[in-house]
Length: 291
Length: 257
Image (cartoon, rainbow over all chains, first blue to last red):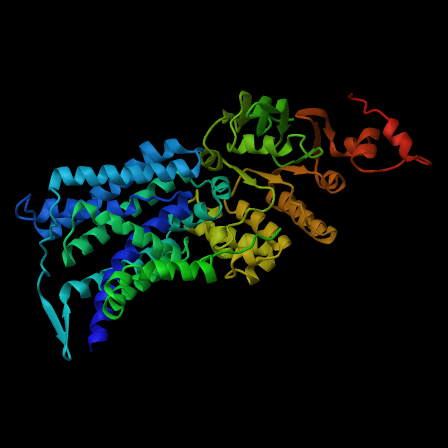
């Protein structure tokens, strides 16, 4: 029973990692850039929502604040691409990486200035409620996190496979030149992807702040999510989510069964093992091009 | 003859400091197949890329359907009716054949017309119908080339730019694909601009031809006239005169030099 409880809270944590990893993978697939500020996006999304809903700030109703903060984060993602990343076109990957790392610092300090450095929790309708199923006591937030993540992943999957824009996004990431030849406005599509990544980060942030507390340094868990994305196979959406879940589940078990100092390194040890035995990740989509 | 559907006037394109096309002019008339011959590095592909907007020309005009289109974004050019079937297929490897075709119709919104054209493509390339749920990356080279052409057709273009459709294919497959191109031209009235190194196959298919060398057009004419020209026979078709020896070939000078 204890283990089951650990598993569920691990899964809920893993969902947040998975959603951040999803953002990494979305942007990497579409633009070949790695956005190391993705974790900080998550944190910013959380704070934007807190700023809109919590009674000490604007105090809007939760369900009204939700779409607004999603919209704000999507817009931020889009603007970031439009005015900063797109100008880096043709620069080396390293400069883009450094740019996004720097951007992460900026976001962290700005968030600290606006909302302070104390951990804060998102006031939400599910807070503190519990669900007991056959002797198992689950936080309603944990359940909500898992459900929302499943729905979001399913929605993204449908979007990518059923809609024209989704297909175009896949096409642009698999063969950018061919997408140009087919009349796909590749730059606009990439802008959409950044917006989408912003919105996904916002969802991750909301879930994270609802089930715990967020402070400006929470963005650093983007590193863990990055490890999750690599474990899943960078470039695969389901892989990113699976990687997130694996890291999320390993953590509570490691801290329970392994000595305190060592349990922290468990996700990275796993990362090393995966990289040694399956360098492309667990669920990679690597094929050799036929000539 | 009527006004050409595609007119190119004094186009110059650069790769960085290197001038890849040095003032090319040519005409493509509606319903015709125009073939551009030339060796590696003659600038044929660059010319195609410049027309489809992937590269911007420094100078000159491209007039399509009466409007200047040089330097426009590629998706606007596809919208206006030019589709580029690139060299080396360039399919979307992880998408199914069906999805590849759907992306070919990205610029269109008429669901019914798109489905009709999908049937049309399957009609010309029955193998694609058999493989419609298969990932494009798992197709053979010839099938990928067919998919690339079919994907181009899905945009319902007024003109197709075909870059080396014979690249890396067996002679039999080349014959098959060129036969389909001929049928497309005859039955659908598809205007085509064809870049080829396989001069014999290209001249056989085309109505008109241009010969490119180091970024310039050095010769033009109907395909028939080109095929009869001694230079073309010697340098592009590999026909040898009676008793010709290697040395004589090396000594010969092209008439345009």
